[in-house]
Image (cartoon, rainbow, N blue to C red; front, side, top):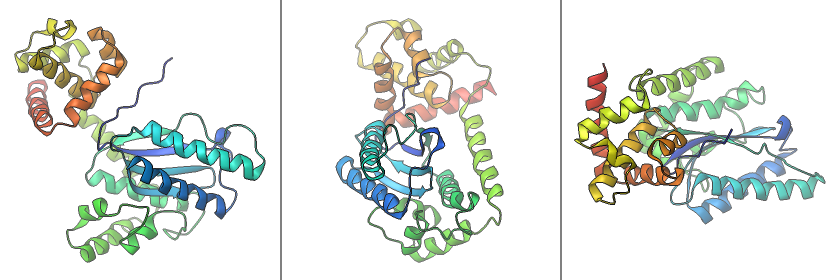
Length: 296
């Protein structure tokens, strides 16, 4: 079965987990962890992405980052390959260091981002590597300093307050608001499930019905979806349907490509054209509200 294509657009935020091959150790000592962070810093400068959080465990890493023009795959390929070369040379190791497929979840830039941050910062405690948040190889310390050469703390702190001192105080309160890691983990995944449920218009709705619903709202003839029309309006309407179907989990890129009879890369470009255009995104939000009301 083919792997699903990752959605890329300027400003996309991902929670990434990269594990050691066969769950093996990937950081044998502090020098290894320092090297991995140095590589992140190098590739930040090269590919212009934002890093909001990290936790380097012994056999896996957690990263929370926002991409710009360069896709996540290019960033992660550079970091992982460079670290693999370093690790294999230093430790006289042969073969893969990381699992070939890292996990990446697309996230929203809202309060949900705070919960992911907490989840990442408490991950070492769950593994018994430290007590509470006192762990050298996570970005928690970067937030306490309110400034960092590698972590972009401003976006998350601004979610707590505009004033920096107030933001730091509220950040600390938020991070200490759970005594047990399991409560944080439950809250994190329950929140994620709520978002997924909220994004789905109707669990039972078919792709064909959803296309019909959106097309009606747009006064757009469905047959144009499979046509080769290059009319600006036709292309924009097709892209709006693509954007909403993917955003709401109605269909995958491959399913949409098959339905419209086009290459999956055009589906990705259609999604990105809406995601990067504030006017089209606003129109998509209005369509989303209208269709939700009709399916309730």
